[in-house]
Image 1 (cartoon, rainbow, N blue to C red):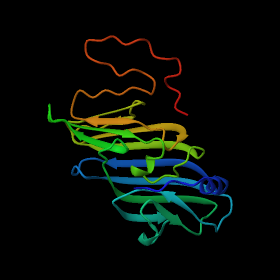
Image 2 (image 1 turned 90 degrees about the horizontal axis):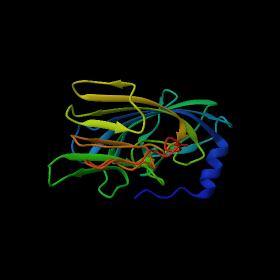
Image 3 (image 1 turned 30 degrees about the vertical axis):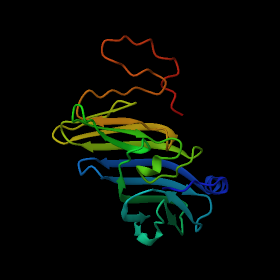
Image 4 (image 1 turned 120 degrees about the vertical axis):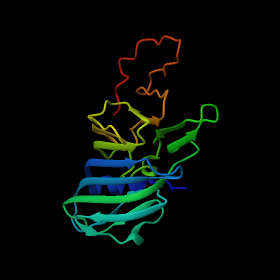
Length: 221
């Protein structure tokens, strides 16, 4: 179980770094236990030479690169990766295998015994984004996001933003999002009958009409 970020840790990290952009690649084509997670994050540091940490709860960390240099895998402590010797401008790459959840936290995977289909959905609040990808998982550190999700060809990937690119054989969906905090993301994957809508909008049910969406249904920040 991932430990909680303390108030002092969040305060100190927010004073030290300025997160700019995330590029997250998720590969869900493997088994039903883990998925591949690749994160590239760029961020500034107000005190070059200082250290901080990035949050990640993973089954295994395969590679960590900071500004083109490898970071020792021993820097991973189960729910965070220590980062030392930061530059004024930084690029961090983290390659890991993360676990699907069965309790609704992070990336939840469910096999329906009635229709035998597989359903996956993300729930990253209040502090579960780092169960899916490496991130500075606190609400005051916002950044732009680019997501790429690769799934089996029979699956559909539905999110609260339209994809920019969709593949054909093994479905690959890419989308770019404006600056939001790490935990405000949402998506659904599965073989069929998948539905997803922005927060606050009722989920459609066959045979039932929906009321008009709220004027604030697209307010993600």
